[in-house]
Image (cartoon, rainbow over the protein chains, first blue to last red):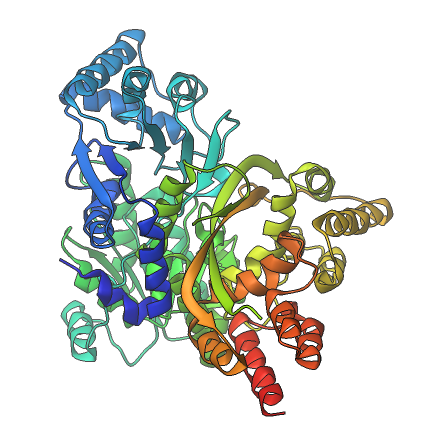
Amino acid sequence: MTRIEEYASIIGRATLDELFLLAKHLEGKTIQNINSTAVGGGVAEILSRMIPLMKQLGVDVKWDVIKGNEKFFMITKKLHNGLHGVPVEISDEELEFFLTINRENAEQLTFSDIVFVHDPQPVALVEKRTSVGGHWLWRCHIDFSKPDARIWKFLKGFVKVYDTAVFSAPAFARNLPIAQVLISPSIDPLSEKNKELPIEVINSVFDRFGIDRSRPVVTQISRFDYLKDPAGVIKAYKIVKRYIDLQLVLAGGGATDDPEGSVVLEQVKNEAEKDKDIFVLLLPAASDIEINALQRGSAVILQKSLKEGFGLTVAEALWKAKPVIASAVGGIPLQIAHKYGGILTHSIEGTAHWIKQLIHEPEYAQRLGVNGREHIRNNFLISRQIRDNLLLFISLFFSGDVVHLK
Amino acid sequence: MDPFRFRTKLDQTLLLGRRATNTTQLLEGIRSVPEPSIYYHTHRFLQAHHFLTPEPPNDFAYWVTNVLNDAILGEKLSSIDIVQFQSIFDLRNRLAEIIETHIKSANKTPDSPPGEEFHFMASRIFIMETPYLANDASEFREILKRVTINSLYYHIFDAKLRLAGGENDFSRWFRSLSKPALADELTRLDPYTHTLEGLRKRLIVLIAKHDKN
């Protein structure tokens, strides 16, 4: 287990002390996180890292998982897709079944002073609020910019019963009668994916994949998905290749359960077969060290997404002080101030233009990377997300824009 | 003379659910959002990007320059001399006046690309006492080296404008210590044109200079 004290060398002693000061204001309060899965997925990952750290700060926090059967999770998948803006067919009977499972779980759970509900699956537990009391918070981790109107209307009936709704990016804010708070996701600088690596490890990963470290490497880490635009990345690479002898790495997880993703992967592989300097790496799930090494050994990192939730791969690359060229979509503009801590682009041509610029001007590229790393240090590390969560819990007990904590 | 108690503050970012896609909507928003939103958008960049050269100014200027590609309005908004304002009310009026004048003279007000709208936000600040207490200028300087930038930010920026204290906390305390020359010099500093770490160093040098005298 990671010790909270290990973060002092990264964020500074005084900043860590502020977390301890803040946590004192939650003495005597119990906090309960509730989501729908104990392992797998981003929410379980962040909770499993964050909860032990919050306990070390002295916070009385726990984590419960609701139970559901296959039918329930089929329905919640539809709700999830609907919030993403994908048109879905969902019947009244399915919505009623969703409520039944939530009610069954509500009867079995014991609720704490502060109930922190994550994502749509357990959202209707809040019906229990009238009988158990307490403070209730709803945290939406998913992209919420264009939700399906019917599904949002259904969920909104529950969301507005909470004290506060929490979103990951400004664009996800809704017209709601309750307070809405921004808490961006974060990366853990001490995780396998982000920790410092010896140069030998980086070299061995590049050697294993047959990538030549003596020539510039441009890399995009993302799953093979149309929305990550790997085809656009290859086009940008080809424009630059006329001038610079570079290599392109497209690395990411599989898309075995996603027929559209398989088509994208096939297209990308076909392109790669025609050019020995394009590397398409389909990585298994436990490849954090490989991803870490690929990012650290690259000259430039791309994230040329057409649509993005938050795009934490940008934060991961910036944390390694790498110059990043990324599309101005989703949460990416929060992570990159254009020309200060990275480059925001809107087209294939723009991406190609900036790849050339950054490879030709390594000092400028390095400055972007260094600025980007500092921006991540201050705004997108797990310690900041812990701070925001503590503030969120404390804020339930105060009103007004300026709060003096005694 | 009371010792100086260093405080710190942490911000909670509120989403107002209001957005602008062009300068006309930006103006409407600036005129009607609550004051903590104006404060947030004119100060957030300082805190979020405090390590950078002090170039990126306020959110309004950044958005107009980089998203709407309106360099003229962007420059006007970025050169607002925030240190001269004693209230957010006045600052809001100045921002609105600049944008309104610009809209009248412009031929068109282009829309932002989809996904790059301006989102109005605000912050609640939570103020806490730190264990640090300074009895004289020398102790003050030593503590100043250690406190977080949140603490520095609170005493310099929040105390003056958000909490309408008239001047920053450091100047006020040195005035109470009968060090008016140092207090005046700290008041004359334009903190908006420093990075926060640069500002910390500058304050330490100034206090050391006066402590010797």
